Length: 95
Image (cartoon, rainbow, N blue to C red):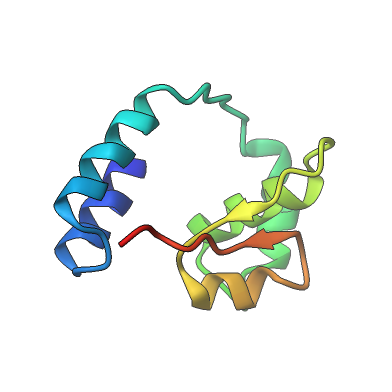
């Protein structure tokens, strides 16, 4: 998924080639934790009117995450839809 986002930002002109390479290198150094979505299904279904089930899974996880992990997205529409359900951050991309 993360690679798709980077590729899309690069193809859309929002992320320069050099920044893409830096972001891809940074991505390989992340410690990623996987979480099952099955326990989140009731929350995902509750969010179905405002976003896709795919997006709702991320919002649901951010809303129940014990450590207060925000949803970090560059998708402003998703950020607006999620803002009432969890903490949201929209990072500014380097030029």
